[in-house]
Length: 435
Image 1: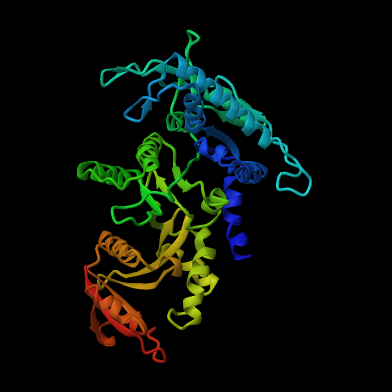
Image 2 (image 1 turned 90 degrees about the vertical axis):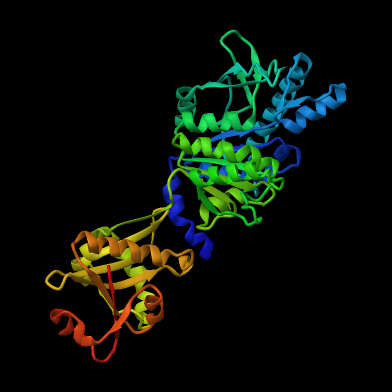
């Protein structure tokens, strides 16, 4: 029930947005697309505009083996000669038909009951040959030259789901074998998609210690990739090797969010999109966290953040009316559009100091130095006001402030105006810091 309630903000936010979802042919081969189709149906019912990009590597490999044709790769790209191109056409056609069939299901008492998913596919991708790579002619292997964003948008406007195969066509009538990630990234960029989602074998992107990275900026992802290449790390998975550079390219070209998640988790897309932590790795164009001045519309969120601490007696109780009157003093920390921290700064211009008050961080985010970043932001705000110090009154967190350079002071050192408001019953300790 809690999970379902927490999904509400995302449900409201995703309506009318464009998501590009890419997955390898293994999802179809392993029978996983049935469950995926249920999730896609749910997204479609929420009016999410969906573009699917499928792969077909295992299906192509199977046909090549049956025909006795040897697979030749150059830097992970298939050398597509005439015989291999026939296998590519057959495989992509078979995968596309199977996907369309599964999306057409509407059995009673099934997750697809009542669904009305219409699938559009066609020559939306124009391609060009890759040519010679490392002295080898890749022949019919190509790269995306252009994606017909206008044509796709018209289909999406008509309520259709667009399905793209990893194939492209040239103005001269040639057909080219493309990579899944090349088509997905260029489609997401051309459509100015809100999200690009890769379903992969791994659970996401991992650091050199093997830890799953829940979120990272494109800049951080690039540093990680460079480090892996410099150290010649061998523990990077094949999917990470292909999809991480693709994600960086997407973010560098305006795609706000790219998600890398496991195809082996049932409901992976829903868990990634409708829970705050997700289950894979989200790569963003800009840092997810930011600081800003509070506005009157933030009062409700601030109250929700501080009320538990007020109930415990850690913070002095503030009503909505008081918050509305003092909102200009508040500074906020946001994480992906959600307020996760706040602090108020009350200046005393004559004494060139300010009180730091009502500092709170959401319990789910009390890690990673967020309190330090909020404190630093408030210190900078005080400096911009020409102040020389800040002080706090606290009954519970004295050690936290002492560890950050604050020094305990006597109550008599408070500005006269603040001293008159000192609550003798709370007996708060006073700490100050020069800035």
